[in-house]
Length: 421
Image (cartoon, rainbow, N blue to C red; front, side, top):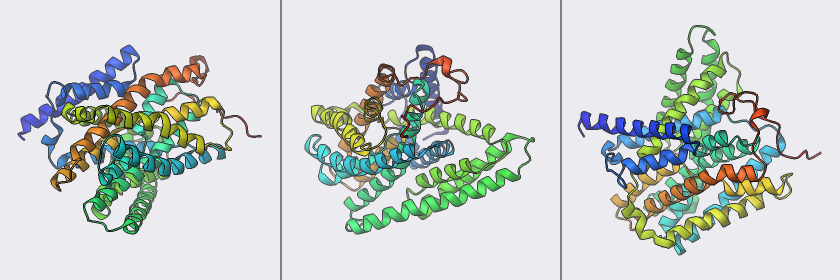
């Protein structure tokens, strides 16, 4: 690919993302939905101006680095005050891990027609809700705390788990791993190794931030943060593939928990960079979607996704919240909002290529079904999240916010969870 063509690819992609952001600000429509549509417009399904595969092997690296930045930002801002919120996140994550994996495997095979091995990879890929989608939605609809914290934390916990598990199931289907015991050992090694390396890098980064003089420039803090974060991701992927995602979350959590001078200013810069990453990644990955991959799925693919949305997710949330002080309104909203995001799209694109190279049947259907899942969950849930939250009385009135409702520094309101005491 010529440098001129490469520059044009990125120029069109970023312009499409920025245009979607502008249209969202003007119209009030969810930004993530418009970002997705902008990618469809400039990609294979639309004008054909952007072909992500032209980036070659660099696509995986670019996507990985930008996703690590988004997940680091999520870990940096992760707040789970109170035992009720922590218990809710933990139980939803664990129960969804079991229920969604099993149900996803069955519906992908029976309804969408995927082979058992490819269906298993699909169920792992779509396991996690995307914080890259959930966070903008929560901010835009002014969702009452702590429901937003629960949804964001759930995505941050399951996103790395789903990506790592999908890789291991892919290796199992290709014969690189032998048996479920090796899968379990490799899963623990990648998750545990990533968390340990991320925690160590987070401690090192926080110590470095402490020693930077408070006044000179926040840019030095930003450079130090990006340097350590990207080095962390590269080392993790070199040692244990796919461990870079849990490492990024762990590093963000450690830095966020340890006090550092001007941490608020740094946090603001990291958040803006994370938003830029989302603006670039969503159109780029959506541009890879082809109607020729979606159309063969037919009603079977649509039924598969609908079952995951309206049956599997609500059942998992209902089971997870038994005995917790949540009312029906909160359970209904938690059971509905589960959009899939960038990591899901990235993993699907990269894994389908490996499956095709290995000659595994159903690789194209896998990518098509994953992107159908993203399209349906982001589209339907993104457009209905605010009306549903408003109907359930879970939106914070503008006058109750500490600052402007659109500001990132808006003060979160009192929890809508009832007092267990």
